[in-house]
Amino acid sequence: MGMSHWVATGLASCFAVSAFGQPVLEQGLQAELLGNAGGANPIMDWIPTPAFGSGLMVGTTDGAGVTLSVMDEDGLLAAFTTISGTGASDVRFDRGGGFNGELLVTTRASGTRRARVRQFDAMGIQTATNAEGGPANQLRWFVDIVSPGTIYQPGPGEGGGNAFLVDADPDQGIQYWSFAPSGNLSQLPSLSSVSDANGVEFDRNGDYGGRLLGVSAAGLFAIDGGFNEALLQPANGESFFDLTQTRGGTFGQFVYVASFSSGTVFRMKTDGTREVVATGFDPIFRLASDEAGDRIFIGETDGDVWVLSAEPEPCVVDLTTSGTNPGDPDYGVPDGQVTAADLTCYVELWLNGCP
Image 1: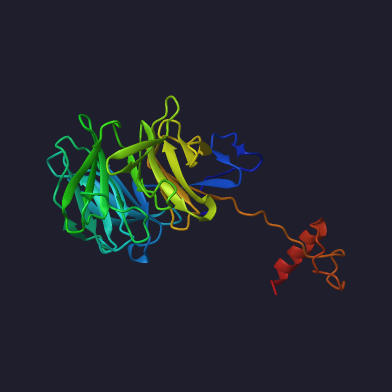
Image 2: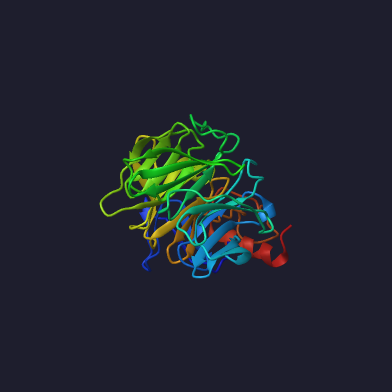
């Protein structure tokens, strides 16, 4: 990561915060301001294949349409493609091959409020403009894709679809759709008890029965063939806006949920409790994580993108047992203690080149 970026760390206790208003973090983590997505309310997904670049795919919408860019690990943006005359609500890479390993972008159909799924190859060329669907008042879709190794099994009526889209209808509750690589779109049972949807992610770890997980102002819930189970209720004033699931690494096998209003990232426990991982961000619009589970990316409504990761181990140098004289037979031999003599020895080695 670029050394000039703003970094906050959780050092002293369970949580730590600087005097300048940086995020409050769980001990052992650091938060780095990676860069800005180039516009407000960024959508994003980690890029799983080098063909599309390295880093995050980020998207923003303005009056002209959608701009998709690759944000590298130094926070620099490289243009990927643009979509004119529409707005986008989600991006997701096909990690299983059903959609040729390409990028899916959910947008509003031009001139309507209905949803459309667009597919792009690694050159930024649109390879499919899939038929629009959804109710006439549909404003946005959130998408995830079933891939090999996913525990989730399609239920009755879901056919061969391996992409699933969720959004809210004010009269019917959550609308749940199956979308096949062939372009066929079919509506599945609605969830009338949930009034809105802000994000969707498959439970690839199997902690929640391999079901589709969604977040909304009502909380975190699991979906399976029209059945939904509330897993976590937000506190007063909170509104959950996105989630990501890590499969190991620094962040373990957990679901992480973002609260829009409090700028907080929670770790979801299978017993229904939650733990604060980081807080003090501007309103959080999107979450993403890398394939290894070592980084969680936080997209704020102002377009800033932060990355949470493990704090680096402190630099400890143990080089010598007896003073600083290079002629001493024990010079440069570790003795299990870090002293001022080690610093002198290190500087001497640095000035003369490492062996």
